[in-house]
Image (cartoon, rainbow, N blue to C red; front, side, top):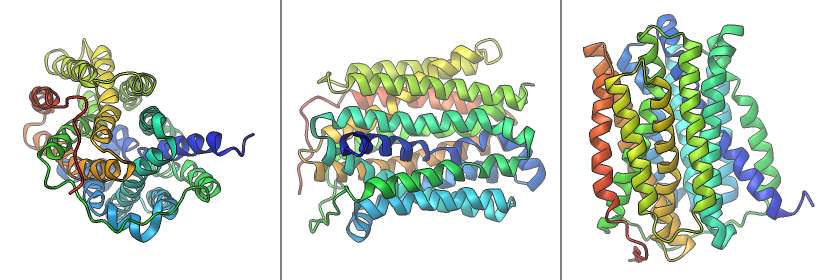
Length: 385
């Protein structure tokens, strides 16, 4: 029974998904001590999150080449292996250059997996693709939850390089799991170079995904340092990020349960944007008093927006092939946009010694997202050209 691919495949997808965020999520709660011991400035420290997100976006634009050259089976395996190497490097060589280099290598690995996995999910799951996509997205956020909460305690018990490098262990499990189920994944090549560049709707989807993911990258990098500046301990600040990520997981599970039943995704998009906006405004006006509810609200918003953005992008494709191209385009430009927000926040902190302006910026971008969401009517499609 365990060898039935209908059971193994979802398990493998979840295990791989769990490994796609610890590389990013483990740095935020440890950022101050990393800066203290390595001499990283605020703007350079922001690159530990911004750089992999940016690399993820750039690599997404080459997803068609990755798919044709490697195929889904070997591509996902190569991606998770790069994540494994990046984690090992952070544990063994805890200095500035290896940290930044591992951010690049890990970003490439994450990008390869995220470019190929939606194609595999759509091809394997048929009518259940939206639900499995929600489960996969939830697993990604679950990995961030575990890493953000565990990293400060691991650093206290051992040291911060161990807290960054220990995530090589689950990555190794992910490599083994995908090796086991990868033989069941068909390796397809596409001779058609269709892209979504010429469709205005694709650009709207890209901007929407980029802003929602930018909120995620922003809190992942700078929420713990923001509260540590307010006098909170690294463990408590990490717990705040863990609570936010836990709320993301809850929202992601809700989306995975609901996604296949709802024809129009816009009401859920509006609710997610409203929750994120409320969380950002709470951080602006009363961060000390409203810290916990702010994190819950922001987490619910971000956690719903991430899978919903990908599901809405998939909805615009008539076939798995076209859906994969749209999702790759949306993620490519979207992650590039998302990488800007933690970098801007680092510059704000370096020059103003306060991150409140970053939360105000994200609040304004929530209104932009609401305007974009109005256009995502059910039944709209992006046709192959």
